[in-house]
Length: 432
Ligand SMILES: Cc1cc2nc3c(=O)[nH]c(=O)nc-3n(C[C@H](O)[C@H](O)[C@H](O)COP(=O)(O)OP(=O)(O)OC[C@H]3O[C@@H](n4cnc5c(N)ncnc54)[C@H](O)[C@@H]3O)c2cc1C
Image (tube, rainbow, N blue to C red):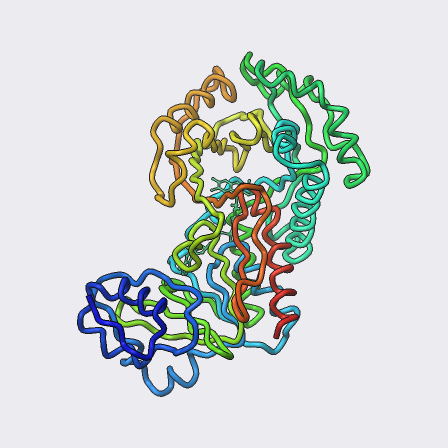
């Protein structure tokens, strides 16, 4: 255990004792630490790395480390925040720091539904939220999709309206009793029916006998997640936003006028101190490593994709079971994901690994409900990590003088993300 240097406040020294327990050589680093309050603290990994940028050149220190704005996380929210910052501050310097080689959370792993909420999902939400809150959520999702489409264009994101449906099995038939009521509730926002009946399409799509009814979601579409994220990255580059990948932020320290954002330089085995005037934390499910104590729980999503299926009849995107299962047609394949509700506790994890029980259920439903009698092969599988809380609203707020949070997107960050980024950027720039 390293003893506390006298000039470091007690609570800060406590954190650093934790951090440096296995780094007995690190005592000399203390004078480099800021004397102001440490608001946030990442987990320094105990690999004997404790030098702060000593191998950096004069040129690097002068020209590579200081920015007006830094955004942590290059998911849809981080990139959208950076783009909105650029819109509001055309001449500012903006840096996005991403720990992964590619974005490594949910934004490149999702299903690409441009959705605002299915009938059974909204009914489920009504158990925990008043009507007004649901309208606010639906409105946020719509605003996000509108902003995304306006920002990149439908062609760039592969947006299409090939039909969005909800499958109703025996256990959900009761939801149909509320069909008109929910349409009435959403009409002031959507100006037409959110849902209509589409039972006539059940046989056309070739679904199994478990599908008793089909509901059409009239205000939803689909997009190509890969094209969307590539589009956002390309626009960032065109907009003079720097993006560094493989840049894991290990700690954040707020000082009087700026923020120090420490990034691990794995190759040089040292930490590089970036600095900015304002910081946006857009790390969704992984935020607790930088900002402890928020109401954010990770939630893993399992996904499989088939090989192309000749003569596939299914077109569009499909929800079932309160939105916990979802599938779509993409490039002549079926992408099928979900099932978190089969094991909430097991799926409350940040590990990109598989839940065999859920995967087996996905395969079973694929063979019996979605593609009964149609030969198909699973091509491959993956998982992505979402972030949930007590309610379904994202956290968009100022955390301290120079640090802002845009996190906890739940299962609809594709829909909300662009609007969350805009709201966060407006909040940040109004404090600049
Ligand atoms: C299987 C699945 C299906 C989904 N389907 C849909 C859908 O159809 N429609 C929809 O609207 N939403 C869907 N979602 C949800 C949506 O994908 C997410 O809500 C959204 O992508 C969250 O975006 P984000 O930018 O907040 O977080 P993320 O995409 O998780 O981005 C956070 C980024 O921060 C980086 N990061 C974390 N910690 C650090 C650090 N210390 N230093 C540097 N970088 C760091 C991570 O590597 C990551 O790239 C789905 C999600 C999953 C997993």
